[in-house]
Amino acid sequence: MNQLRPRAGATKNSYCPQTTLTSDHQKLTVTDTFSGDSVTLTPARLYHYKYDQEQTSGQKPSTMQGLAALDPDGLVLVDLPGDWHAPDLTEFARQAGIPVEDARNARSNKVRAVLASRAPGWRRVRGLPPPSAAKWRKPVVICLAIAGALSMAYLASSGMWAAWRGLSTIGRVLVDLLEAKWLLVTFSPALLLLRPALARTHRWRVARGTILGPYGGPYLTRGSLTKLHVTQGNNVVAKLRLGENPGWAFSLLLYRYEDLSGLLVLDRFGHALHHLPGPWSPQDVERFAKRQDLALAVHKVTREEYLAYAKGAKEATP
Image 1: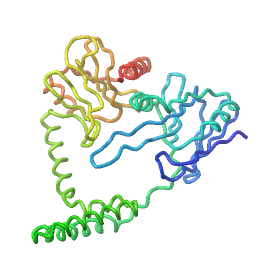
Image 2: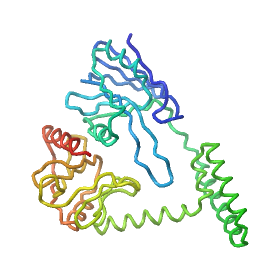
Image 3: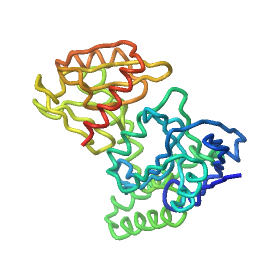
């Protein structure tokens, strides 16, 4: 039987997913060893990808990699994160009779646009055990954070700046050595107050219609008098000029297609400029559209309309 497994995790130094890919002619069966779940499909092609994740504050951008199975319309049927060895994948696909598109050197924006175009019922098979949800972790982190904040405040008030910097350095070294990123809050106590405050400010702006989307992104905001910004984390991933000219942001479309939903930024002629898949609050979208003087449409779309919008958003992605 033709069989293939990933060799390493979706990101550097992460665990190797226990995902098995087997083929019977042009039929593929994806099996998650940990959960025991499996899915059988007949893709039109395989999409071997690699892209950089959006950079967030205080973190280095990480490179994601994996394999996606696409239908004839280019929509993702199943996403398989992991490092799939290219020579083995090529041989596997040859025996299965399924073409492979190597997109590992494609622009990250293009790859993300392809992965965002999902077929109804799409799945992501990680092949990893579910993370342990230790009940003690959160209270321990809070206690350590309070202790760290008090210690650093005492050192600062006593003028012991060398000790203050030393404590901060030791904390960050421990974080790197233990790879326990949740401990970072112990040595950055301001995050305990700053992040909730920023989140509340974000929700207040959403309620006023000056911003649209969840805290952390992706969200829409008015970057200037003439531009609409699409932001992920601290990065502006797209700047769309506002106006009635072709290729300029003019309206929003809140759509639903079968079990999929999302938001599209369109120009005056109905061409898709940017696609933001996922659930969006109709009330929030309406407030934002009114505040920013954008036209708004809310309706179900047909398969042909969905494919046309998805294709147009891919082509418009810089």
